[in-house]
Image 1 (spheres, rainbow, N blue to C red):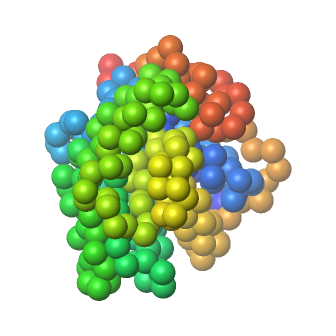
Image 2 (cartoon, rainbow, N blue to C red; image 1 turned 135 degrees about the vertical axis):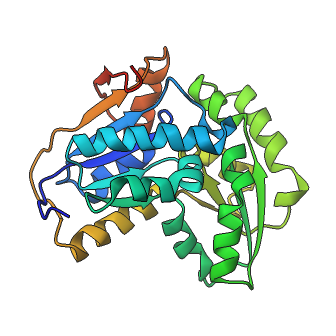
Length: 270
C-alpha cells in the first residue's frame, strides 16, 4: 500500500446516514480529507439482495480507489454485513477497509456492565445475523436480541423526525418483547443516530444506546497512527457525491454533518 498520509479517506453509504460517521471522523481526525458517496439512487440497501448490495458497494469502492483514497470506510451496516469481504477483495493492497460493525462488536463484547444487548437495523443487516454471531463469538456469556426496523430509514430520509409520526413508529418497534430486558442497544444503522435521543427517551435513558460513529472514528484514528498514515493538514477540503438528488437530502444532511455541504451528483452506473 502507498505510504502517502495526505491521501483522502473515502466514506460511502446508501444515503445520508453515513454522514454521521463522516462527521465523527471529521471531529476525531480534523486533518483528514474526506470524499463521501451517498448512493441515493439505490436507497435503501436494507431490502436489497446480498448480490445487489455487493454490486453497488464494489462499484462505489472502485470510484473511491480512483480518487486515491487510503481508506475505504463502509459507513453502512447493511453493506458492512453483506459486502465486507467483497470490498476487501476489490481493494486489495490499495487501501485499508473499515466497516461499522467490527469496531462496535469489539466495544460491546467485553464491556463490564453489559449482559443483555439489543440490536436494531435494516432487514439486510438483521437477517445476515452478523452482529449476533460476532458478539457471541467474542463473548458467549452475553445474550443478544436483534430486531429489524425497516421503516426507520425511509422515515428519516423523508424527514419524519422529532414528531408524532416518528415517535409512534419508534414506540411500535421498541415495545417488541425482544427488546424487553436489554441494558444496551446497538444502533445497527448509520441513519439511526439522528433519532438517538428519541430512542433513549423511550427507554427513560436507562438503556445505553450505542452510536457506532464515534467508535468507528476512534478505531480509524488508531489504524492510521499504527500505520503512519495520519494526516495533520489544516482546513482540509471535503467532497460530497450522491448518485441522485433527493428533495430532502440537503436539509437532512445538515442535521447529520452539522454544517452546510455542497453536493455533486455523479452517476457511476452509466
